[in-house]
Length: 140
Image 1 (cartoon, one colour):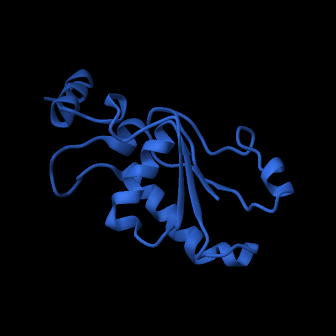
Image 2 (cartoon, rainbow, N blue to C red; image 1 turned 180 degrees about the vertical axis):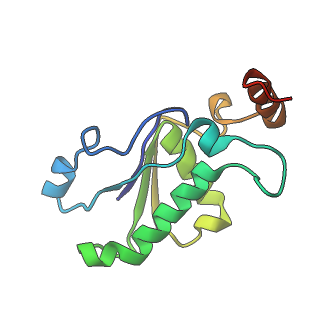
């Protein structure tokens, strides 16, 4: 099981202190958690090809790719991966479900308490937001 943490794409962590595997391990589940870039480092969109945005989701794709390629070493089955997310992690699961970048990386999905179509998970004016941030930091 690959777990994507929540936190509104602003904060959070895949820390084992928050998401310890004890219960799942007792039941034969291999749990993988990971971190990904958040806030402006992960989801700033500049509207240019050199920096198209959503690198936080691309970090998640790379984590899924790593799991697919390496889980066998830990006793897992690369053809039996469940992607599970809570809140923003749940929204991420839906993004991966429809993304060609994530195709074949997992076979099952669990979405808990979040959706990719929730207003908090969408940027309606990303370029405007990027310009406001730049202005607040003293750049024109």
